[in-house]
Image 1 (cartoon, helix red, strand yellow):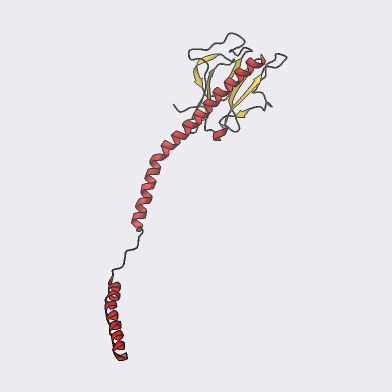
Image 2 (cartoon, rainbow, N blue to C red):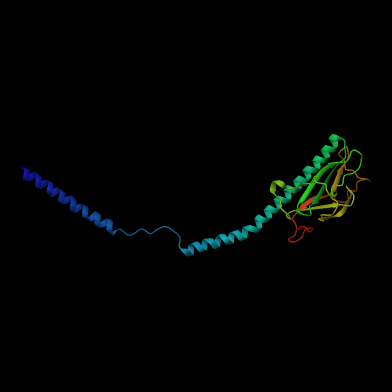
Length: 211
């Protein structure tokens, strides 16, 4: 009886061993799976494609950035003109706004100032006048990135036909105590009115704007 049970267990163990051997053999015969990745040629092709796309996109991005700078400075020009006009109305004093391109930093600047109580006129372009503020501070506009142009003549509030980007030109607009344009004589607004505008300079120039 004992021998019979022992023989049955031995027979069953041998059967299990026989049936497991093909599985082990089958596992050994499975083909190796290829490893994922890129070949050197594929990497080079991808890099070249990225370079081409970057070269195509660069001019468009540069144009977008330049337009944003000009728009930001023009918005600020309008804001300071409105601020000066508002101060003139509120204080019942004559207020002026002057613009310039600073010689050393070559950045556009602005200043708002009232007429002196003794009725003398402040000269913001005189040496030592230090109330100037940079335009386009939010975009951190750097030297030579934006020009300020105007059609103002030598006298405030008097216009000529052409806009110039000469940093030494008069760039002042004055509001009287009622917030209206004023000058020593009657304002001469010309054909297009008084113009203060921002523009992108031609490469290598400081007084010529890109059309």
